[in-house]
Amino acid sequence: TQLLEQSPQFLSIQEGENLTVYCNSSSVFSSLQWYRQEPGEGPVLLVTVVTGGEVKKLKRLTFQFGDARKDSSLHITAAQPGDTGLYLCANLRYGGSQGNLIFGKGTKLSVKP
Amino acid sequence: KAGVTQTPRYLIKTRGQQVTLSCSPISGHRSVSWYQQTPGQGLQFLFEYFSETQRNKGNFPGRFSGRQFSNSRSEMNVSTLELGDSALYLCASSFWAGKDRVEAFFGQGTRLTVV
Image (cartoon, rainbow over all chains, first blue to last red; front, side, top):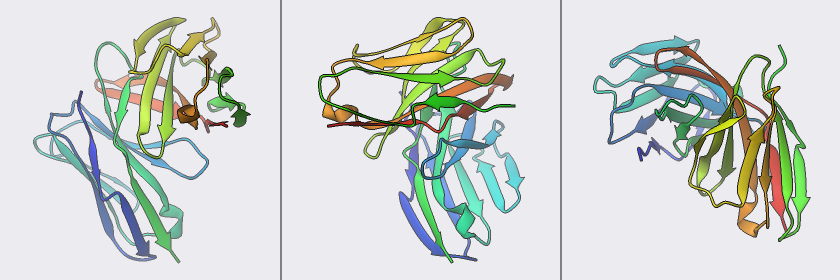
């Protein structure tokens, strides 16, 4: 079973700071997804990366997929309190299933005003 | 377009009881998956249903079961509840968005507390 390791586990920063969170595996990802989960809500899909070396930007969020497709990072520029939440990476487990996602344990981000 | 709806939002049950949770997926989505989220283990896959058939099952005991109806709505049932079953239960409906791409949409979850 492929394990996804996320770091750091917790991150508390001030508004305006930059941060990077990481997702790593010992196996190659077919694709990787990043989700954000706010308290009391379900996870919301932010992005899917598929190609090694791929970089995707979503406003102040930059997602990078490692060349070897074993790691990914999420960089947030000028963090805002609204970025507070649990950031999860997930990998699709194949076997004909479209719903079998394996999740990392997440990075809990707190952005203080 | 309505999102994924889970009911109830909160539930308190006693050890030994059973519970049924409900999930209505996004219209047109035929795949429904269930996940258990706890602080210690994170999000763990329970099972997936597609067109009323269980397609995949995670590593959970047989006390956890589910089903899907012809309108794609799904229910999950936990029998003989244990304290360790206290968790947020999340339902997701999804569809293929291209090669290696799945779009999964989660409900708000049902917070189950077993006392």
